[in-house]
Length: 412
Image (cartoon, rainbow, N blue to C red):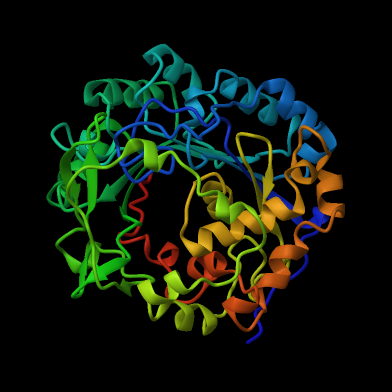
């Protein structure tokens, strides 16, 4: 089963998704930085990219090629990074004319003055990008997922950004506890001056028991169970991609934080073969992956005659083919498809893909991207087909099922 892909070539790079920092002010339970809302993983290296790093990696000649920037990441909030505003100013002054800059934040840090000044870098009357505020509910619900965030501070900061002339979107991640507030939150967003209100189907509810999504338990810092994050009741708000029926689910009780911090060393030896534990736990997993055609989301698709692509750069300076791989790369896991992709990259060598040790040209010339392309057309997961790529970029995947409401773009 062949899939379509062009080559990863530097001259077709048009978008860079970069995680400015792995630091964050929150403990969102389903975020890879967090142990189910209890604490930050001890294995997470807390780093941030400085202006000097950024200008070294992306000098003006290369900068002018990149027409689209995304500052988001998987473990940190960009607005924590101390040089974030300076990096944006560098792109605005040295980069391609009208470069698109898209950035995500929970909005719960810094002062209103910071946000007011930041708003000037995302002008409402231009088509040069926007800042997305992730606000998952109202005052009585936002903190259930955005743990430790202060609602009043978020409202004050986002309003300051808009008052400073900033183009802002409100993204609303839907759970059972907040789905009844979608319309009220959208009304508030319009009143405040948000440009778009975007309701999103939450990832992470693909495992089902007797047809019902398995909830996510949330724990205190001591490891005691507090409450459940549940999938929305309304089927229209549920993410139904890559649903997998499992036979058992332990969703209550307490967790051993020490165990959660531990990386199982047996997975660090060689490239993994498909293990029998995975086959027994999810009987249909292997069949589904083997029968899935992979259409990489960051490469030009058949309908795109330009065949342009993007890359992802982690907060540690490693080049990844996409944000999905870049995010799970640092997550200790015994789950086959995550451990498999991690081992493929580690065997190739982190030193070869670090922008602290190589130029971007050298990374492209190293043959690094071939390891992914070669893994897409394998016939069987036991022979090296990349399971995580199949889950993320195969048919009926969760990523494609995120969007539930059309963007309500306002005429300003």
